[in-house]
Image: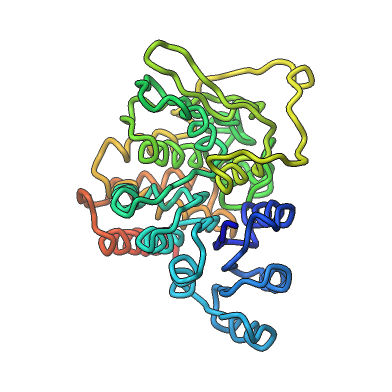
Length: 380
């Protein structure tokens, strides 16, 4: 039986992971659950799965839960997340947190020898060199959950000795595919949250609309698969059926296909190296019809270009990129800035950043805080 700590259990990936656990109780045991603000759902999950540890974002919520659950260790804040990841009885940590908050729990879980099922792309964007070095040092598995990276990971199976020419990440193009910059000036929060294919949380959905989500995935792929940044291409594929592709040195291209459903990559990460049956809808190519592809527009969706630029510069540029983006997306969701203000101010944050190479964990945290403060001051 695999023992799993789920960080971000009330979010989109976390709830789908628990659906998989629910349908396979003889295979999985949940040792820890963590949530942000959805305390009611967390409470229901604690009753259902009886974890050893549960974590809330705020102390007041932890105090409330302690009154209800006497036999569960209730913690809060970053210390709680680290404890859930590193101190529980789990042998795998599924990190479904959103944002930079996922870095420290992942790092400390790896140091305790726990395998990681990773849906938190910011962990590798901000701390890629640190995390991948730790994975090697402590001999753990890092299994990707993002559909694109899971697809690449699956395409690599059985090809360990074969040279990769290219990794081809597919992107849906989001709700504003084909828009000009002029048309993007007036888009609303509600429009940005209307993704054509995927059901995701608000932050990731806005990232998809700006194409920053794909930019973050480029950086994540760079660290996960040990290729140069010039070997990673992005192609817009509106149907979201081909989740990504790998081209080998003989120019053969292997692709992984499936309907847009996150339960498949989540399940594969939880059961790797084995596969397991499920009751999900199967892909019928005849029902899909044509699959189409387009080049991404780097001039309109500058966030994608910025991600490539960040990798080509010093390591800390990716930290600045991510920190600025997190704050600016939140400001957009609060309707305090316009859609194009996101990419325009990420550019400013990166231009003003004083880079360093191979930052330590403390330096990563410090740079992240400095960029966030600088961006917020610009809009206060």
